[in-house]
Image (cartoon, rainbow, N blue to C red):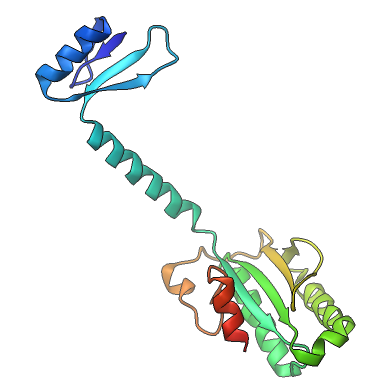
Length: 186
């Protein structure tokens, strides 16, 4: 085994028992760094500290990955023209800030009998948003909701989203649970 000491210096190729003795003398752990190397590489270090640093790095990577938020805007079949225009404007503002948007049309009660009207409205929304965003597919029926996702086109984004933008009012983040979303519809 190739042994690396506390300060990162190479102590050479030693037996496993000798490496374990040196680690015990230093009051540290013997950690396998590269198992598949020839010879395998072990290091004398604090294993708890290694675990802590790995968790910290993973957390930082998740923060960066979570920067791509998805906003959701909900419509209903009987939406008034002004309300429709306002919601479309909100969606366009989200695209300018770099957010992905999920557009949902919720059907209530007897509205389920008029699914053709609902799909017509979703197609109208899609046509209006095509200049600024790409739909992730065709509108799909899921239970009582018709949904379609949109990704902003590269020329649309004016600024990167900030924490203040994420706290925008009037629209919810998709990260809520399905049960909470169903409760808010009723």
